[in-house]
Image (cartoon, rainbow, N blue to C red):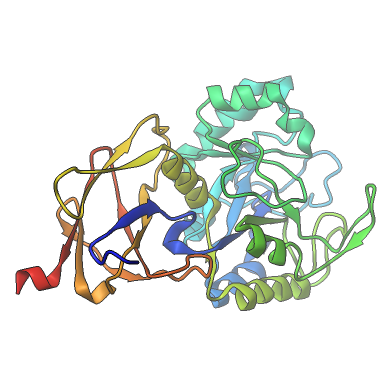
Length: 343
């Protein structure tokens, strides 16, 4: 940078300046996740996300011809426990049927009951069964009832600036799939694509056990461990291992936040946030500062509080860049000062 005093401030594509994102979800929120899945997450430090059938919290599963009938759904204490470990919770309808048969029960009542049980807002709807429960009619009802995102069963990457958060893709983490094109387990599935396109992978499973309950609906504990260990090994420097709730919040916050440089004052900026859904819970933003200074040479404050800055960690951020993360609101003020100016 030719002008040492020139500053360029922008929002990071992903939180903490990471290049790509990995999440994993578990439909039905079964208590047997404690056997193998949760210990693996604890060991590797990756948060998960459970999709709760709200009308069956704490009950023995008995839904149609489900392969998981006879297994227990998590109760309130178990849901609160996984949340204390950094996990998120999504709504998987009231009774795992076709949602438009009774959208008020399957979407609204389900959401309210789940929020009552866990004591916090639920913002993600996860389609039960298949994508027939994520039609435009279902999405319109989900928006009306206060959801801000919807998760599908679609084997694809989520691209960083894709506008539609009501069709979030999830990659089946199963032993094999056979609907149209036969495929089998792959520990590296979509990792290189995510790195190339700076995308977000969400894996989808049910309850990996020593033997998969159903090859088309789950993987084994061995393959589950292999997948998570592979993701950690491949992404240890440049991946944000994230609870999907936090990623959705970050996507909305980044979309609605604008950085305004205050004229006539070096290093002073204002954040304008317009149209942000009030359901967004986590309002922390990562900023990228392109400059000729090291983090040690600057004092950066957000709304009067000094924040920690670090060299940009994402491999895609080139040049001399500094990252910092802080909670923001409409009207937040960022002030960047040189330490030398105080000496």
